[in-house]
Image (tube, rainbow over all chains, first blue to last red):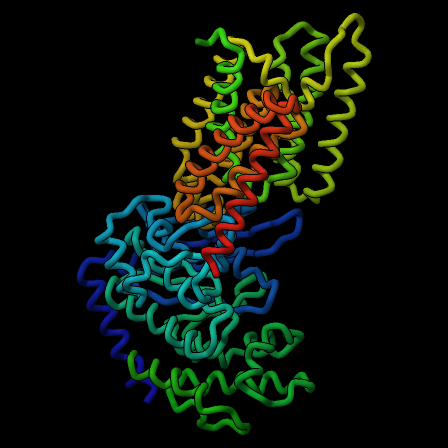
Length: 305
Length: 263
């Protein structure tokens, strides 16, 4: 079952690479023994990672583990205290920030926003909005968009530059469960169509695990790394998400209504995550109740993939 | 034509509005109102220094306003509590300036002209300075417009597209210092911020794009300058505050129109 689910995705990716999106052997972006300090505190320590074309890689980790910091360092916003960030020559990155608060004082339409910082033609704007499922939204004011609409518009803007790499910082924060699953599905579709590589940050463990080729578990350093299956069963990962991460696990709780009072329960909880990423039915093997509405979009996602 | 002091005053008011309109829009979007105050208040210290050293007033105000704006921006970037920092610096600069002027021997200068402006006494030279400064500010903002807007929306987003947000901030800081130096004669140090914020805020309710808001702020600012001037002549009120009163009236009308349209 597991292999049956994964192999179509792999083959579509392969097709893309051979279509000329880049040399699959060369990484798009690399961090080599990267250390980042903010105000004298070392936030990231000895990070080594690389992204290849067409990969979807997710950074997971508890609050304060340096996920956003790592993205910002990879973008070149934060300097490396030690080590280096290496971009492939001519690398184009499309960035979707964690949160874009459009101040109500700025009147700006979706169409105008897409023309920042580089002006684009109406045809381009129309096409990219259609791609993200926001066709016809040109005239809407940005400040009036819902959370899900805003994320799609942000993604559209990032796609306009024909990026080789998309970086998304908690793109589904504030979205409900179906919105979240739909957004990840959109990312997956865009990846298949354009061959863009994706690096995203998430709190949202099990959905992300289903949508990623590779997961990097971060806590100031790279705790563990690999396929979703490997990571979710790694002892480092279980230790990290089993200890003092109530904040991160709060998200988890609304779908897994089990008792979080005993710390050991977290470890159990994450064996569920492992179950999801196998591609089996969402409810399978769970020893607690949760609503069917949660499982539906996830299943859809698996089938679409 | 320029020999008529009223024509000169009107042209000075319109010239100031040209610069404060689009810059004011950024002040509103980026919530820099207090920042504008600090820079403008520092101008009084600049006046004192210029009088003491026999430099042109505009040079003194420009230098001190620039120094103030850059140091505040620097402190903000280093994570100081901006509210407090600005409060300390704005009022200190104002107070130091007022005290410094009183120490100057033999200078009988009317301080209220610097605090509230003296638009009716604008000379041809002042006019050239105002329009030159306004052209500089407009040119600077037009040149950096796309980058400034992007950096205003989100600095990380701007960074990811190759824009350096701190450089764009510096552009605004320089533009602000120029506006202060230029507008001092017209509305005075205490009310420069008002000319930045009120026309832009009034334009917000009527505009559908950032460009529309900037242009609207110019139009409303220019109308307010003319209306304020008329009020000043008619009722013998101080010109600078009268201009701000007219701008405030425009804001009230715009807010009402927005309320009516929204209902």
